[in-house]
Length: 108
Image (cartoon, rainbow, N blue to C red; front, side):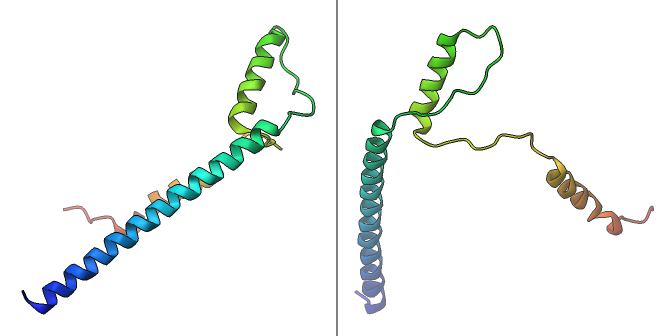
């Protein structure tokens, strides 16, 4: 067998082993951090007041939704919710549309 081919196969084999070790290490880290976060979320108790809701919504529904949200996001807090501005996207669109304005073909 040719020496360069043998060397390339060795490098390929070593890279496969290293990739597998990194994948196993990442999987292990994900499992450990997931268990730590799950344990911390189970110990956390929601505190504070529930935000005011519109009249006519039963208290049982508010409690059930609050519990479901807390179960999903854990002890994190939403600090501020506001309407989004569309200025950034509209500026991008106008820049895209005007970028080709100087390159129009002359009429035939």
